[in-house]
Image 1 (tube, one colour):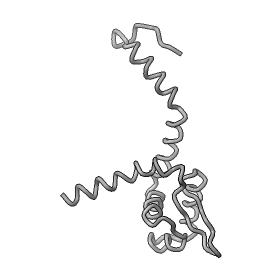
Image 2: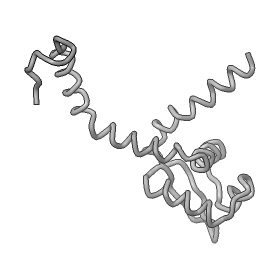
Image 3: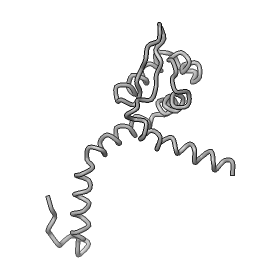
Image 4: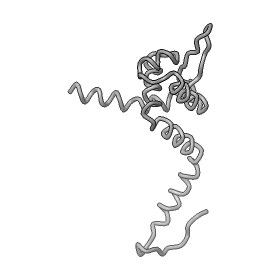
Length: 126
């Protein structure tokens, strides 16, 4: 879907730039869609806290997360389900307890998100 028209309200469109942009967005559409979904999920304060706690502790159960955040177990479970359904978390049952961990396939993208906190910590120390 190349753009060939040379006219627009700017007087002259940069057709090369437009065509490169169309191609780039097209090539990355799957990654863009996946990243947008992840950012939408972590854009929720509770889910972001859950992910950060789970990342820091490696594995955490619902009850501990409930106690840490002061939110009911059912509310925590609902948020964990969304994160698990989106492949950001995985669960592991040990006896009667279910522990949550960062899903290995989401580790890299979540690390980029968590870098924000590292940069904020550095600024506070300086």
